[in-house]
Structures are given as structure tokens and as C-alpha cells.
Picture 1 (cartoon, one colour):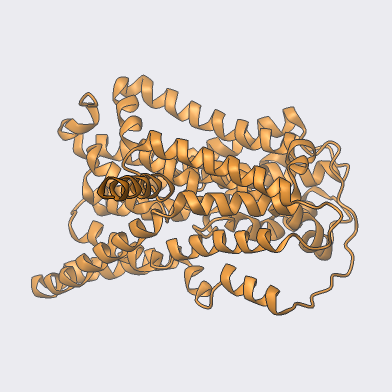
Picture 2 (cartoon, one colour):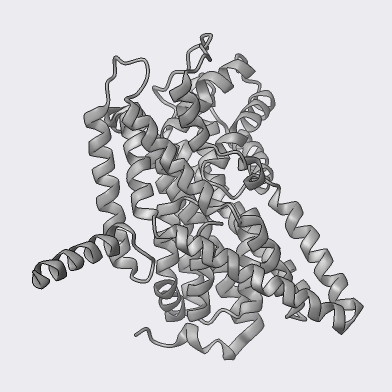
Length: 443
């Protein structure tokens, strides 16, 4: 009897360890995420009915649970950003230089991302064969089940999680500078307030992250059950290829450049940051990955004063992957409407996308919300006619939103890699030879 109980306990521990995994072992977590994603896609395909008006109830509930996970993950995002920015500035006399250097690095990498997206878009022509019909009037009536699913997917406090983080960072940076310049007593009191705030928010997010594999399963089930795998393999295959290729070339270019300067140190650093990359890919949220990112960065030798500033700031304004995604989508729409994109058009669209990416919220799927304004602006600037607000809102944006679950993971991963590259450069510049952990061999 005792042996049977022990066996049952070991089985429960095995299930808990794998289905509710942490990021301590990136290889195991990546395997679990791939298995859960594959299972969700296959299960959703079995439940998919192309003739049905609404997806199966299980599919809709699964999608709502996946959205609920993301909301819980980012629920304390604002306090974490506020505490991190304050701690970075209050503990480092070089914080202004670090900020200016980070902005220059982010501008350079964003320009690189837009350039690669333009090249890939003109080469693959992802808009070829895509059609956007005129919108039809939608029936917005909802039953009790629909309202319940909507409440789970978008809880009552969701607007708080969509707060403008760029303004929050600017406000906290200014406040921290004032506190530091006022008196030691006031600074000590502020330190005592923000230190536990950072710990509380990080602990919360790490606890929520234990449910990441199950959330990936629910989101995968919701995607395949709603649209079917045929949609991904047929209609949007080239678009996804353009997304992944553009981001991959951008990351590879930055990696080669840094490797030429610092050789093997970059490879060791990326290996130590790998758990954060796996969590970013699974969660689709740079902000939700912050606790794991900062923990990995500490092990990789990034000073806390650099990490506390660069990662919240980078997750807000450094959107390399988002730039690639929006650039590709704008080119798809213009090409689908019969407009041959010139290099002048690409330059103009790229500038618009770079500006729009700064205002993108650090939340999953946030770039879709910006797509409407960017599309209308690009259509007017390039002289394309026939792009109405209704067509963008009711046809074009939902088309891209249907497979955003997949491309958003690669965008988030690219965004985070850009942030960690910037942290690596800042560490080498401001810490110099003291950055021993970055160059040390991994164990």
C-alpha cells in the first residue's frame, strides 16, 4: 500500500514538474512547450468545423483561458517597471549615460530590423495571392456563454495592464533623479518602499509562469480550433516565412557583428540567457519574461544597475520583432491591393513603422492594435486607394490577428534578443574587464 502511494506521488510530481514547468531547465521547458503546442494544434484541428458559424465551445473556452494567463502574467507589470527603473537610477551614478547609450543602440537595431523586413518583403512578395474583400455587417449579439468567455479572456482590470509604460518609465526616471538629488533620508525611505515592491511583483510573475505550458496548450487549441491548420499551411505560409526570415536575418546580423568584436563571449552570454528566450517564446510577452530575464542576466554578469533599467525600457521601446512584423503586414496589404512597392515606399513605410513601434504596448498581440493606423497612413502616403477604415477594422486586422499567435512568439523572442544584446554591449562598455561572468566558460 505504501509503495502504491509512493508511486502515485511520484507520478503526480512528474506531471507537476513537466506540465507546470519553470524556466530552470531551458531544454526541458522547450521540449514541454513544443509538445504542448503540438498537442493543442492537433486537438484544435480535430474540433475545427469549417462549416460552423462559431467555434466549438471547448475551443472558445481554451482561447479565453490562454488570454487569462497572459493577463495574470502582466497584472503587476506597472509596479515592476516602476520599481526597476527607480532602483536602476538610484543605485547608479552613470544612469544617464546608460540611458543615452541604450537609446542609440535601440535606434540602430530597429533600423536594421526594418531594413531586413524591407528586403525580405520585396524578395518574397508575401502579399501575392492574398485578397481582402469588402466588409460585411457583423452581428454583435452575444449570449450568456459568449459574455462569460469574453469576461475570462479580458478581465475587468485589463485597461490597467494596457497603461502607457513609456510615460511611466519617464515619470519614474524623473522622480528617481529628484529623490536622489534631494536628501539621503528621502532616498533611503524611497529605497525601502521600492525594494519590496520589486520582489513582490517578481515572485508573482514567477508563480504565474509555472502555468506557461498549459497556457500554450490552451492558446494552440484555440487557434487551430477556430481557423484550422489548413489556414496556416496554405493562405499565410509565405507571410509567416517573411516574418521569420526577416527576424532571423536581423538577429544573425547583430550576432555576427558582436561576435567579431567580442568573439566567444557572446556565445557564452547567449547560452546563459537561453532560459529567458524560451520563456519569451512561450509567453509572447517581453514584460512577462522580465523576472526570468533579470535572473539570467545576473548569472551572465550584467550589473543590476544596467539590468534594472535596460530590460523594462527595452521591453517598452525596443521593438525589433514588432517592426519586422508590421513592415511585412503593411507590404502584404499594399501588394494585395495591386500596388508595386518601390524602395522609396519602403523607406517611408519603415520610418512610420519605427515611430509606431515605440508606442506599442509590451503585451501579446499589441502590434495588431497599431496595424490600423499604420496601414491607413501608409496607404495615403503611397497613393493606394480603396483602403477604408471599415475594411481595415473588419477584414484586414482580423485576417492578421488569426495567426498572430504564431508570429507574436517570434516577435517577442526577437525583441528580447535585441534587449539582451544591448545589455551585453552596455555591460562591456560600462563595466569593462570586470564583466568576468560573461567571458567565463559555462558549466
